[in-house]
Image 1 (spheres, one colour):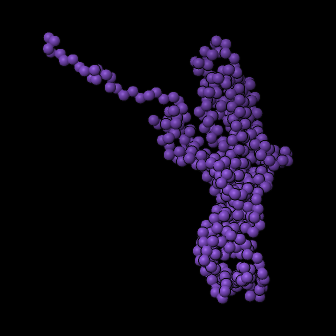
Image 2 (cartoon, helix red, strand yellow):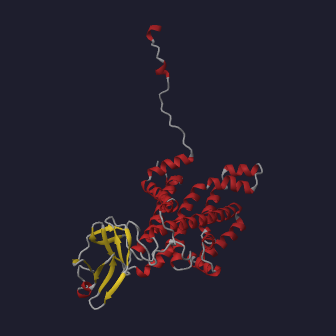
Image 3 (cartoon, one colour):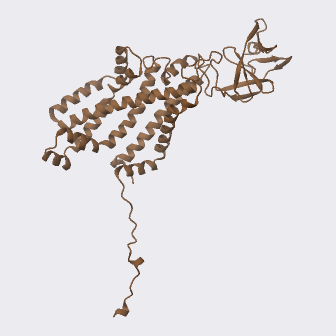
Length: 392
């Protein structure tokens, strides 16, 4: 009978079933988050914004308040007129004639020598020579293709030689000669610090308040939620504005305090709902049975099990805080000058929007990109952390 059987090798005896390594809750959430392309785009932009805010200022030669009176209202791109090899001129909006090299690097400002108001020609010293700027073209033909002509050594240059990037000020300058790119970097610091500090305080108040309300239930819950309803009945932005006016101080701490004192109500409602669903679970009943204190049950069991929705809400609160801070600064009751807040930059530039649109464009883009990045990231976290929204 033994001949009817064949002994298998050791390799064949081994279990060939592929066992996937077990995943923790957070590893599984990260795996799901990586599948969401828009969330990963948002995460990349969030990282870039942090680098822009805290690493970028190390590479700029300017400070957020440094003024260059010769370089007021310079655009990011310069229309240059070549007068010699590697020597070009550019006329700024303040009628300053500036010199640049062929790459767009500013090299100085030429002094005004005289004005011919009859013929509308301004003359500037260039060494021992005079360079004329003829503005009569715009008077004779307001809709024509020529803004002005350069007169130098008997030659008339009617069209720009080239359009180059402003190498000294990549995003241009504002109305008092400050570098817009540098101010955007410092503005990013203010926006992020306000957002994260205010959000941290909001989460601390909201999570504590909501967890106590949900765990206690009954009359305590009823009274605490009616307080929330009263606060919610007032438009939160108006409440923040009134609080800022009453405090009569426009600084970072005041803005954080104003935001944190109002926006925690949404977090409180969210946490209360989570606690109401969790407090009747078996592990909470077991903790109560063995005499675990209420504080330990709340902070060691209930809140950790509600962490997913809390993180999602936290991520969504950050862009709200950023936008609110920018709005407050825009209307003049947020961060005050000369601090480089995105809101103050927009406030300073909107009056010259038609003539210098880039001064409004860059802070507006910074606000929009930051808010969108955090919203995309928050949406992905919601899908990754909420079991009900998981699709595999």
